[in-house]
Image 1 (spheres, helix red, strand yellow):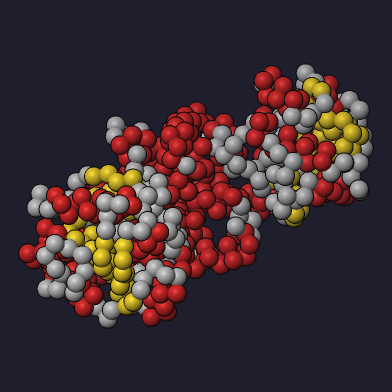
Image 2 (image 1 turned 180 degrees about the vertical axis):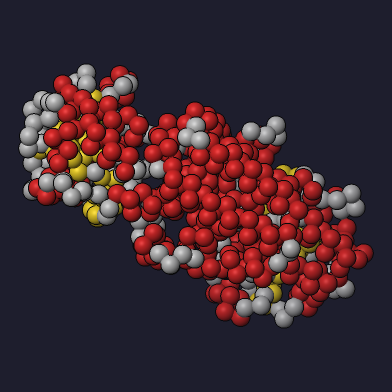
Length: 292
Length: 292
């Protein structure tokens, strides 16, 4: 086992943080896990589930003697976590995060970690779910999933290797890209789909006859609406943190919807069928690559 | 068993038609099944799978001596099927369909079936899938699913009861509503979600960097894009047949997206979180009702 963590600190012991701890434990890669979080009930659950061994009142206190820290709070709360770590994090320890956007997290880390910034390896485990909290965590969450690292010029190579090894020990497939590229790609394939799903459910269910409509909703609605069950605070933060890229994706999508709407208005069956056939071919090619 | 069908004719032996035949067979409710279809390969598969016993060259020929007919072609092809049935359908036989829109199908049936129109019971099994063809059929497809009947003033009550009994024998939950209400409800909970999914995949995959984007797509993209694998011809027909209701739903959705886009542009986190939280609560209430 290349990864040997003596003291792991998890700041934000939700689905992402608790699953990381459980996976490392299962791999025999960690000795002690300390959890930091806002919700006492959630921490109790994490203790009960064996994800963490003890709790600490804040990130700074927990960081004393730590050799590995995962910050897995909603992205807007990460600045506070980094500030807490700044003065107490031992030289030689590494810090990573589980945020779905990378540029805003990197800015916060740069501003707060000071001389410890080179020990920080930005990461995004692409393993979200509409479930949340330690109660939803599992040691298998990362098995076969992608974790994207976005290290910077100043990031210590040995920190990147330790973080890579830890995610690999969780069963993840680790890739690397630049932070801006990450945010652009994720705006298209993850953040926009979430926004579309929230919009569908929000619009339908704000109506007076919502109950009558939903009583007849079937598998089609179920699929497109599933992401609307996701954590509102987490997704508010992601939208704000990746605002410009997401707005760009939203504009493109709105233009596509307008094109399809025009074809429909003109009863242009050929244009509709062409668009649907192109989509079907692409979706089937994607699943054939084993992505589903 | 209240349903005893001597000779069932299935016009369009795809997912819907072949599954209907398999389910009735499993329930011991049918003696002989005759299939009519465009694709020889598909009919061969239906024969091989035991969904049908024999084939006929057209709906009219098949209708001779039939006591139950299911028309399960794409909705735009139903007019031709009804015209074929018009002169050969025995008095006392019933006809139903599996179309996802009802007003256009009823118009076609009224225009083509003539004096046999009172034997037609419009139906919509809400059990679609992104799979299609006899190869995807199963006897269990309708178990627990809703089938909506939209009978008219002139529909014979005994025909409604026979059709209801047949769908119930397939394990379905049968409900009734008016054709206009059906089309309005389904535009909101099914046709719009399909259009949104097609639009997402179409827009993304028309880009030069589509492959690079899709390589990082995960569970969020998977859910929202699943419907884009649906049959393009079938969905072209549904969109055109239910054009006005679907356009109305599309306009409402576009307005909602514009509202969310404005909140995002203004970095109005409170408005975003409020919309997301409302959507999440509604989605969770829906699944709690056992719809998922």
